[in-house]
Image 1 (tube, rainbow, N blue to C red):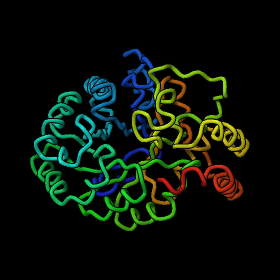
Image 2 (image 1 turned 45 degrees about the vertical axis):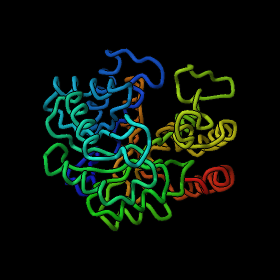
Image 3 (image 1 turned 60 degrees about the vertical axis):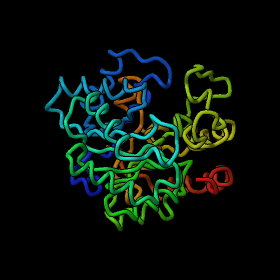
Image 4 (image 1 turned 135 degrees about the vertical axis):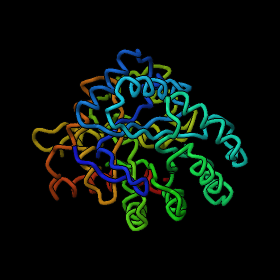
Length: 327
């Protein structure tokens, strides 16, 4: 699989990575054996990049990855984790003492002395302007607790604030055919600054797979059931902030744009991969088949100008008015 250097880390990662939120059982129960099988299928398909967080399953996702890495030390996997959501979301909680405590936990979960990359996990907006915060992160690098640091953001303005900081290696941001705003300023600014871009929520929580209907029932412990209006965390994390009914209708139109031999989900991933400035896209997978299908998107031919124009037209007509002003 094609590898791209992730910002200032100097490390190359696969253009399709694996997001592991769902392996923490935050999307419904996932058995350990099934989770390990997903990790293995991804690696066997060419994936070299796992994305996780210390709060996914209260550390379960990190622990599963740690067990896998212990059994496969030769796999050459780059692991990005996140921190910041283990405390009340107040700027003052983003301090060196808490960073060290959270870091100790993640290093233990993953079974490593130095974490490849630690991302602030969608912190309060005020955090991005704090010189002390970046000093604390630099201290963590100096202590060899982390090799590099980054941010996962909710909005384009937050992304631009992070990109302006010289120590930020990468920015993780929601980017998919239903969330085009980052193309305007964020991706060009990141490319100019040498900052990597990790595209998250690439299938709009599964909407872009085209598999859901109005009759689809999500488990009560699945965020697609309990967070549609931002009840638990930012609404943009669930279906990319798109109203479910609107998203279903738009997804049918999107699926019609898929070229022969590609699924709707693979078309969405291929669209992201070929956006200038993107380093890696991190779809989740709950089955071996999903992991393999997602990885296969990297081998698809580039989408034609007609398909790209179709994505833009669909977004402008169906989605833009709902999400563009917010994120």
